[in-house]
Amino acid sequence: MNDSGPSDTGNRAHAQWYGVLTVRRGGPLPPARAASRLSAYVYGNLLVLAAIVLASAGDIYEGHAVLIVLGTGVTTYIAHVFADLLAWANIPEAHESTSGSHTDGEGGEGAEVDDGGEAERPDLRREILDELRDAVPIMSSAIWPAIILALGYHDLIPTQVAQLVSGCVIVIRIASVPIVTERVRGNRLDMRMLIAGLIAAGLAAVIVMLKTFLGH
Image 1: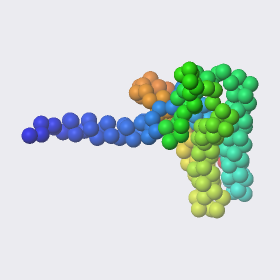
Image 2 (image 1 turned 180 degrees about the vertical axis):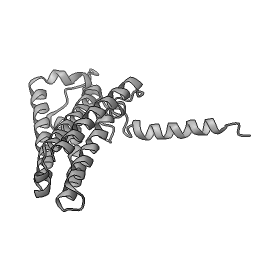
Image 3 (image 1 turned 30 degrees about the vertical axis):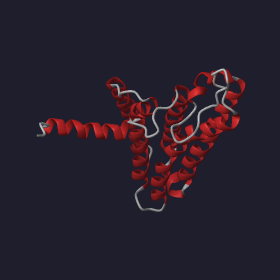
Image 4 (image 1 turned 60 degrees about the vertical axis):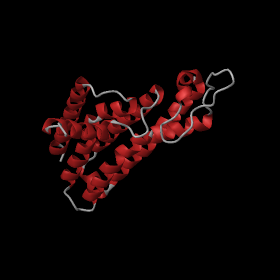
């Protein structure tokens, strides 16, 4: 006989949805890579939001805003990867503590281990591949805003609405920073972190709305 009641069913459903949002399929990342991926996520969102806020109605109408947002994503991605690789090349010992678990949970193999049982320093090829993957959130932050601004360029939606909605997309991404943090670290979501994310998103939303309504 099944003694589970509605509350148990609700708890299981909540746990399933919580897992979808906060549990990374490949498992948590090593601390250094988790920090790099989270940094890329936050950095990309902030710069794309700045590009959206600074765009004028004319920029959206003429299609310049789409190019600016995409250009911001691409150039920031390249700069972020280059800066991290340059830092790794000059201070390789900073990555040695995580080289033993140097994997992203996507089928990759960790660093080789010598006969003494000590992990070797990760090679340049693997470091490049990891940095290219960890910087992807910068590019993803620009995709949807660029698509929405393109709708404004093609007169499918008003330019003011295009700017507002594209800004709201980034605001939602900023609010999700605590969830992203939990996913890459494998920790439980802290309510204080969630509130901090919502406050940051609220401030960003106010900036976008003020710029949208006062700048047009």
